[in-house]
Length: 352
Image 1 (tube, one colour):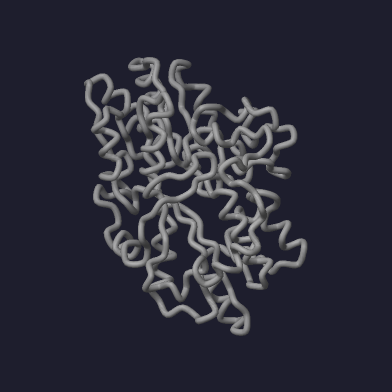
Image 2 (cartoon, rainbow, N blue to C red):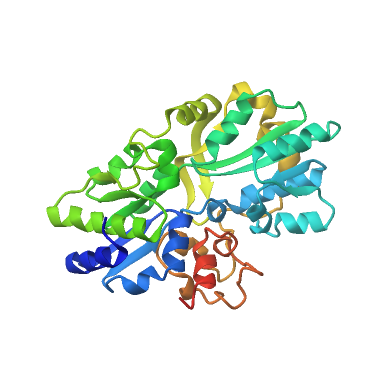
């Protein structure tokens, strides 16, 4: 098997001006941590797309979760979600003002809280791409406590990429390995049909180099296909059981994405047959009554470049707030919150 040095040498040999977009926070972490952009030929530009689920969760969905927390329920979610800005505040702000907001590592942790507090209503704020949706679907298919419900904010990756194709100057895609373990490689075929080479990659530095080399080999041969460079984890058809559970529990519908706006057929909503555990329906009146009076169509962080960063149009150091007002300790935009966010990784590894 080729070493990293041998892969780099081959990439330099085949190199041409090219813009490659990945859509995975873990890929960005690897690329930033190992300073990979500095060792690739200068004519190769590796862009980061909307691959961080925390980053793309829009203000209105954060505000809905805050409204629920303020209404008296126990609101549970992942740690990163606590610091993602809504239109005026985040979940930690709500907790500091008396709301019962709790960090959990999984939906099972949230269910355990509901079982220990039968007199309280417990809501799990479920975010994530196709990777986390099956776990939450599996939980909903079980016999959930009566006092437990899910505020679903799941996003689907391929529709977001398709939305960006006409907006960005990009030549090829590195597909996200985590997502493809669930959905397989076939949902990315439309991009190959449009002439974009696509390679599904793992998460090590060598995995990323292999995917870039495979893209150049496609280009050199004049073809555009979807290739699986992560066969140790990804089957071409994906995880059929996980897909089945998602289809049992969720409907596909339009969804708001932070920085990208409304994208058709890019989100998951809980099916009617599970509405007894759908927090969006159970607490619809409470949420609408407690939402702040803002225009979400125009809601943006002042001066923050997160929207363009998520679209691959700008880089973190193009933002006037980067590493100044906006740091991991004091994030202004969502891209600085999570370890999968581009700004977070550029900040952490900016000296590499």
